Image (cartoon, rainbow, N blue to C red; front, side, top):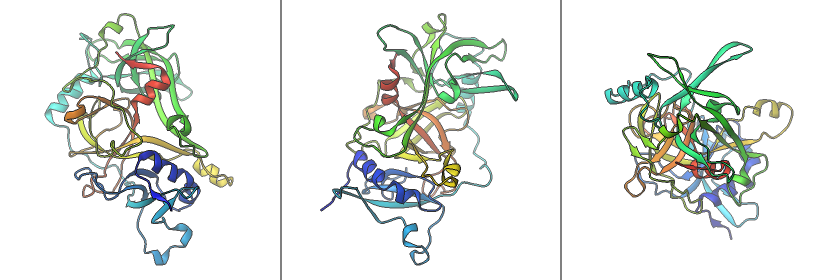
Length: 371
């Protein structure tokens, strides 16, 4: 007799064993691992489950059996089972008008975007970016410093900072901080990047066919005169207090309260509402057209805001995600890299969802540590 999955690792295995069934459901906007009927304002007390995000619910009488999300999914070997929870969500046709930033955040964002050369230190949350010539002309790139880090490789002791791969680009890209009153200052050069990992390398014990985890991380080696200015003192938050370790053999990270400081939205607060969310695969349409089952691409954390307005917005990419709870306050949980505007509605609390990646796993794979 199958026992109910009670941990994130067990849920991930059940989902992996049912990937073909779930991928075949028309309109499936992604799946994730979490708890039934959980919203950011509530307590994560529902049963562990596999969440299916769908554009609408339809009477079962009108749906063919193979297009229904089963109430229970079972592992391939029959030893585990997990209930499902269907959450209705649609992407808005037009961008939502978000509330203005608070006066404190307006001032913080001005500081993070325009340091104006006043570099007693280069803080997490500060804007970094630059411009480069492409076939289409001059293109810009920008994002946010996540954490001050250093390499743990024995042959080097290079210091720098962590941001996103889609900000840091490829190795050798120059990274700058802008200046309103003076020219931009080059603060470093991208040294290494990671975009995806096979799921079996990221989550030990789970091996889903054609599945990857989006990591989206870039290590930028600091210029010699910038390295002494790097420290993990986050504006309006304080010192980073080490690394939070996500235990996949529990459900503990679901419901964790978090915060971040980014160059676009400043200091915001949110809640981890799900883990292992399946994000859209850029090659899905052509795979299906050619008759292939698409690869599944996952991210670790799905975060919903705890206050009016989004948890993140474009330009916040690369921000560090910190725990916002007394027992683990300011411990580094993840690296923010994107988001998903939805029309689920504030009633459920699942609006303007943000993606994050497990920072400890990034550090392990990229051979980095906090300064």
